[in-house]
Image 1 (tube, rainbow, N blue to C red):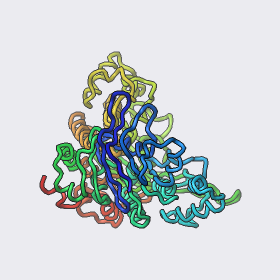
Image 2 (image 1 turned 60 degrees about the vertical axis):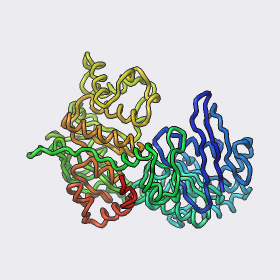
Image 3 (image 1 turned 90 degrees about the horizontal axis):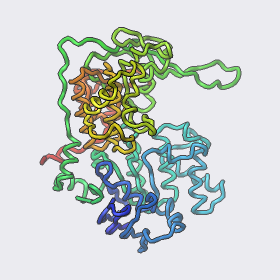
Image 4 (image 1 turned 135 degrees about the horizontal axis):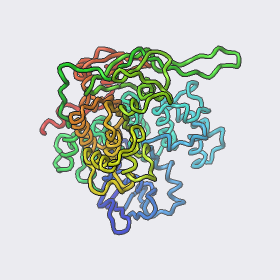
Length: 528
């Protein structure tokens, strides 16, 4: 058992965590939920002694009767990876791109057990088999870039459990994964806790995930645990106002937008084919291609919101790039308001200006060296910079709820939700007809997500916008779209009104996606 008592973290005079108490029991999963910035990750980093420089931790984190907070770095190094393992949100940043997966898992064993390379690789093979990356399909010689997101996350899990630790910390381990992969990873984690009799601390903002896997749950607000208890009991009988707010946000439904009686087609995708050449098996072998998008056809009307759903690798991103004019087609055509979209420099700027995109990670799509006013004004390169461009930037920011001195600040000074609002302002600045939202709310906590979804609905009404909403989260798609397209292996296998497809799916693949989607059991929050 690992016991946390009176944990406090501060930087200078500012308190980050205060009076945090948790008991992490063997064979149990404890969920830690709360908004971004509530202190969840700081609590995890405190446990393993990885706080950023300048932060001070006080209190007790007890393992085998000793306080981890008082240990020197050399002693903590012997505990990290051996007694306490950690899985991070983004496996690609946790894995070394220059090392194959076998050596990365073996490295943990060589460091902590002093095994030679051959013996360590044998153990690594066993750990990778345990997380579902079995031989011969997944040889030890594979590199991270050769794996999907879910497979990379399994490698990260194999590294974290290589030494069968007492505690496994999982920090948002499924946020970037599609619903079926997410379900597989959660089932894997549940099985590991049971079979290895380890304790697990699961950090997430997804209440449905917690409901499906956790034995206990703790709710954190502004560095304090405001409520804690057995999962079902807390879900049914939570009393703290903050917990009530979280649950209300998780069930939030934006007001639906009525479609015009006679909709006008805006985007047409007709028989689109996108292929990629495959490496030749030999110098004299025939060249082969991989068809990522296979004769896809659909349309989006003016002012309509259409969802695009599918597992990772289904072709969603490839199709999106073609729609945005970033990738050439090998067949079919795409038109926006009657004008054909072609990839390359030949695409007229005025046509490109009619489409904008909002990405999953707004921070990664902004130049950190520029102030917000320049970031939001960036699309004017398509239409020409007007004399009153600063007024237009201020108007766009006001439209998304960003006011004050935001224009003169840098993007790192804003929260995740504020950054996403700024990204939407940038997309709005040149008044497009269509906005592509690529996992635009997947990284946001439930309250911020509800706010952004409300904002998108308001902007759609105000400006007559059409949306192509790409998401792994079926609950979000249900809230924000009129129609939905289900994509599998490059084809649209089902489409129709969102409520119809979600309530009565016809295709087996759609049924499997809906079945894999996490949800809070009926009746657990019936009193609200």
